[in-house]
Every structure is written in structure tokens, then in C-alpha cells.
Image 1 (cartoon, rainbow, N blue to C red):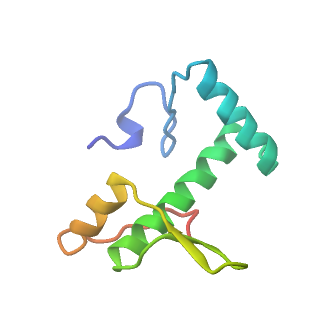
Image 2: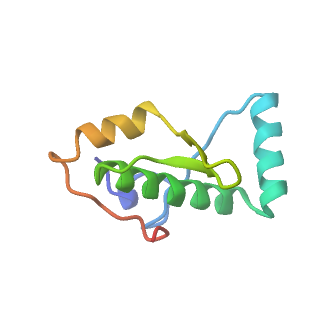
Length: 102
């Protein structure tokens, strides 16, 4: 794995990520940024990575990620292949923390 300072064209400690989104992907990104009040793509990405890291930590701890409808007490479990992989590998890899997660 490369250190960020070894990647050409990047300041030490920074990583530039470029995404290619089709029209629908851009519209989805713009919509989510709009309804969440996020003004920059960087803010959106940081929020997304913080949420994803939390979900990974929860699955690695053996917990289920779910949404609860408080009025009906119905629960819907979130299942993502990446989260299930993290849960299976929990005993093999240490948990690292992103500075934005809590």
C-alpha cells in the first residue's frame, strides 16, 4: 500500500479521489447533498465514510445494522456484502479508526 505522500501530485497526508458518475449517479449525489445540507463533495464523502466505518465496527462486534420503525416496532436489517465480509474477518484483522468516526 502506498503512503499518500508517495502518490504523484498529492500533498503529504492528502489523497485525491476522482469518481466517474453517470447522469443518474450525479443526480443522486446532488439530491443527497441537498437534502442533508452538505455543501461540498468532500463533506459528503467524509459523512459517508464515517457512517460506513461505524457500520463495519458494529458488524465486526457481532451486531446487526438495522432501521427501526418506532410506531410499528418493525425492523429492517441492512445487508451489504462488504459489511458481511468485515464480520467474517473480524477475528483476523484489527479495527482501525478513521478520524471522523465516533
